[in-house]
Image 1 (tube, rainbow, N blue to C red):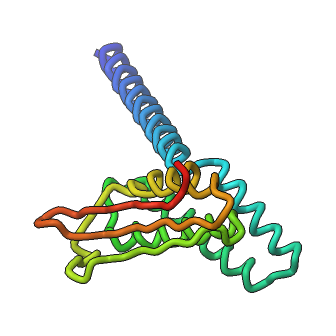
Image 2 (cartoon, rainbow, N blue to C red):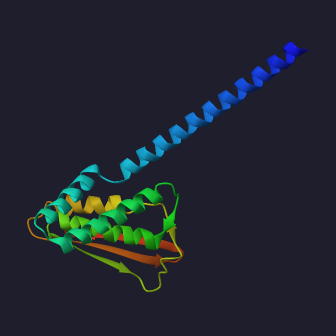
Image 3 (cartoon, rainbow, N blue to C red):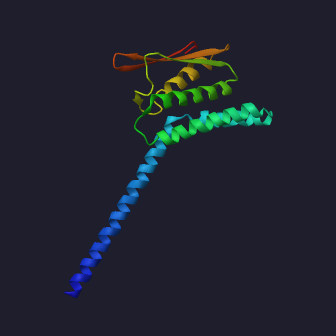
Length: 177
């Protein structure tokens, strides 16, 4: 009877240990998946170039510009980190993130980029939720394949409209791509 109790206790302890190990492994895989998704959402070159451009303004002793762009970069990174765990974010937050992203791109392209964001009057940005970072890769594509290739300054236009019950997003550029 004592041997059976010890054996049952050992089996229970082994079962608890194995369950903890499986949970820990699952959590590590989940964290790794989240990091992979996060890395794929934002071009690593953009991040490095943004920091280099901010650093350049610091060296030039342009304090106002340095602080402004560092603040925008921090807000963008915070949005990316916070939203990486969310399936959906409010459209308003996505637009703020896009504004910060475009402002940083303007810094990188040394004012070669202008942009405009138009939101239809009948569109309530608090009504719509979208997957985070859904629009940014398309905007990045417009800049990289359109505006950066131009000799003269280029413009990116983002329009947010309501079409019946749907959200319509239009991204236009006057670039070469």
